[in-house]
Image (cartoon, rainbow, N blue to C red; front, side, top):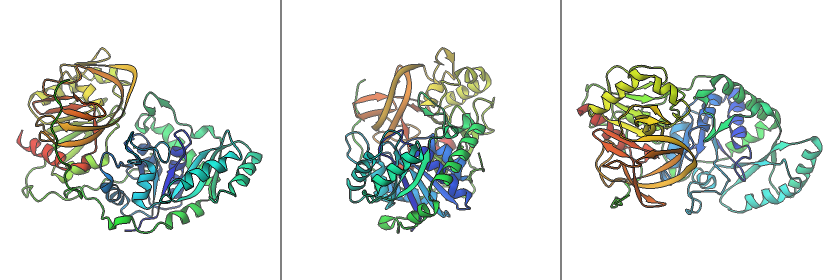
Length: 483
């Protein structure tokens, strides 16, 4: 399959990738193109801004969490019916998983997609040196095609002239020049940008400003032509489909360690086909999916996989809804910022009580990171759901990185020995860090156990991408039917 596509990369974080990528999405969408938005890596926040810009679900492409073999199929799944795709990179162009070479880097994903790269350069503190920088990035890996550069934070006409003159010798065309512009700034806090769901009106204005800035400062015709120069996606990949098994063999098991979303409404996500082993006419169990400003971290494919497994997925907001959706048979609480809303979550006592009762009934409950905190007895001294005999609190220390994990025992998500890859990203600590029955044995970067499995509850700090192991969703829904 062939989809016109661009990868927006940079020499380092902070260069302006999000501004340029989101602005390009908005500018192309304003021209009437159906734009497919993607983000390299595990980040949940940028895709929310992408969704505002395009009116489509923002999707992640993570070669570590899902494996390189799923990057192209997941890309094609998201890009179905679109005129053009824009992929925002992560960190610097060649920065990948620690100690894993190019794995999961923007360059790696660009090669897996056969996509040309647009390099965003923060030119605020350089002039002629920009040519050496761009030449180095363009020539470092001959398999990565840097098709153009966008100069960001240019100070004046004179500064622009010096940069353009220098880049004439680098052999990489200048496809845009952006001046410093306050309206496109987006606020940040302890884990990065503030999510769209927490600043909806301001986020809409920021995305509109990004689109206007890019439309005014970039050669959109040349950028579209570069996107259309990409041929078929390598490897003859077909789009990923949530109703079918993974396109790669299951990863082998190993012994677990012992001991310690705007400007336009987003389209409805495709749900895929119900698997063949689901009895025709069987009632669809209701799976409640936490959403709202406190729980914004969720991959679109999770809901699609649950639906394909036969569930009815209903989103609710723990800040506002005092009861779980009618008929709830299972609960999924992903990541987010419960620490920011601890007081409001605690004040919603009816919902906390309902979640506690659901968990004690043995119903399946899957909680990741923020969900883990919400299930604790308390968070920063505020009463939470009390499902887990543990407390949570904010700290100054950032825990960040990919993890290799093995299921220690059987749970509602996976049988013992199942290997998955995850990602941790938080400034909190849960005490104790693991229950009598831990959720995962983490094998890299250090061996330890973490998380909680009790009755139907699986709670852990690890964010996982269920597309890598679709059996997770099928197992969860089956437990919803039988619990």
